[in-house]
Amino acid sequence: MAVSLAEIIVLGLIADWAFRRLRIPGLIGMLLVGVLLGPYVLGYLDPDLLAIGPDLRLIALIVILLRVGFELSRQTLHRVGGRALLLAFIPATCEGLVITLAGPPLLGLTYLQSALLATVLAAVSPAVVVPAMIRFIKERRGAEKDIPSMVMAATSVDDIYVVVVHSAILGLYVGHRSNLAWQAVGVPLALILGVAAGLVIGTCLYKLFDRFDPRATKRVLVILAFSILLVRLQPVLAAHHIPFAGLVSAMAIGFVILEKREHMAHEISAKLARIWVLAEILLFSMVGAQVNLGVAWSAGLAGAAVIALGLVGRGAGVVACLTGSRLDMKERLFVLVSYSPKATVQAAIGAAPLMAMKAAGMDTAPGEIILAVAVLSIVLTAPAGAWAIRALGNRVLRVAPEHVRDAYEAAVESNPEEVNGL
Image (cartoon, rainbow, N blue to C red):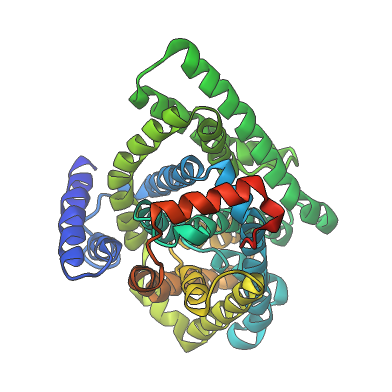
């Protein structure tokens, strides 16, 4: 396993460098490394490494969401919170409804099976979107209107929302839990409990850090450990019918530390950025290793049509959410494009319905279709979405001068109701 890990790291770094030299997002090269080394092409990767792939992807996802929490201040959320909240729920819901309706005629699924497919597809890839938005924030692109911050916050909550709904519908389908009303109530309750847990733990952690003053590296390790434990707590609580969103807890930990100890938060965020260098390689390489080109091909035009229709529904939701905002047409197009790439969530949960159907002794054909379309969505949208975000962002997002940004922040703080916010 150590040799396979070394191969992924070395080849991933080379691919990242080479693709960036060609002005193509480096993650595309990392994906291709995973595809080539994976079991469906050359088969060079150790099976033991593939077996822990889900855990590696989970840790990388936690690192991404922690970076979101440590980059979003209360002032920023105050400015973009309402619009970001709409973008977190409405586009995913629109995409999910379109896929649910399109699945039966195009793929031969039942409506419940199609809804299960919808919860697999209706999530944006945080591994594609968040690093790009953080880069734009550092470059102050779109800072005058807080566009990258809004997109980053909205897409992160979008992912958590979709994962929670997926768990509820999967449980409903395999018969673990049959109370539809409780499932509907459980989604917002899971988010609320996740935020509450993250805020409590974040408060305890910054006070603990104040008392013992550990090095920034040790603070990061403690935060990562607590975040992983919170995510692992989610299925334990679910077994006792307690809804809980562990991923949103990780975001909340970063938010409360940034609010209470800004200098400490910046130190931790810098460490997380270094960890992301390795996590990014592992994440996209392991996602690529899961891509079965034969399965993706078997999904065919019908699967591509379902994905395309879903993106149209998501786009309509984005347009509706941005109606009346301060964004011009090009900036709205940038937000719409930022909502297109699929990868992380689809790789993480794409096979979950198939595994659940096998465990329950059910017909696995619908699970095979769901996995095939999930894989196809990665192949079609992740590379194109990553390239489009970078290219369009560099063209559309204007670099805000310091004095303009400061004046806008002062106006929001003094008279928020008079500022035509996002």
